[in-house]
Image (cartoon, rainbow, N blue to C red; front, side, top):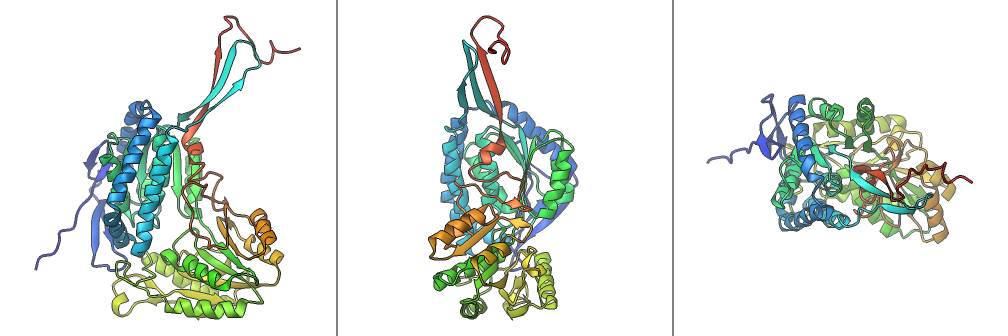
Length: 499
């Protein structure tokens, strides 16, 4: 028998596939089956980053002059190609990231949606015209590209999130250097290969794979990088913002969450139960929008808890490529350690472990990184399990007596990404929309399920005010004001128009 040779990948710099200057590499391993090595990727360093930035800077000189509708046509073609390759790319993603095929197909679909949505923006990069305060003078504003954009992407949505970053940056006329997450580089490679096949010129997008300290930090600090888009943890995002500040570059940060789903006593409990299962255990809880806190009105808490625990315990955990699997593996050993640690902390603080709470290591689980779907009851708002992001299949149940108390508990944490309320009371729904401190609020739906044409991001330690989706062009463009004076005389604003 002969084994399939492991493919070796290179950095994409200036349209060429180049090995890292260091010669060092790392393996991309299937978290459901550690014997399955997806590929070998460059462990890049500052030298590789410098080459990629130089290539992007060179390409910017011509790419910015391509008319925006023409740039958009490339994105539209990319959307069509992604549609053709959806199944292949979804299977690649499940192998490298672990989430079930239904979800990786959705991840690719989100990139398709983003391509078509942003392609339309090529004809809508609107500026404004205003009346001048002086005669024979015309005043307007236009959007200009920023320049070279550095992008650092996460592993949990390894095609969707890079598409949120790359596509609006490209349609606006910027060039890009992207560092994919070291756990999931192949999906970003597949996305960029699609752009190349759609006609993207060399150097407009460059890929430098590797680890944060060696490749990510030099990208953030490079003086020719004009802006940084980062998605990841709040701790790392803080470091990115501090380092970028030294060269005055703007930073878009999309970071952690500890998202609350409130279930009132008038809610459709079966609907809320389905939402809780999907929100808490979809993507194995490895979403910044995951439903990690479920706030239950005391009148329905016992019934809801009993049903949720039974359903969570029955979820089928396994390799996401297999039929019938509902929860895939966690992405690596570090995430297993984090989930295990937080379960121990919760128990020590007095929370009640109702199901799960441990890694799955026997039988078919022996060669992967699996964790049992976990539910904690008796959780109090001050407990760490109720305040800190786990990023695993672990959900906390917190009881409340009044709607006002539920809002207070939901808002009592340092994060503010996504929230949900299940109720039939329209007045409460609108109060929640107004009062919940979050970038996203769902009514009668779980905390996951964002669509590409609305703003995505949060408040407090979740983000710094910028948004993906609608609003991304505000980050990837800069405003220029233009004044055209046809008076043939020197006119002085604020002086010549004085009474």
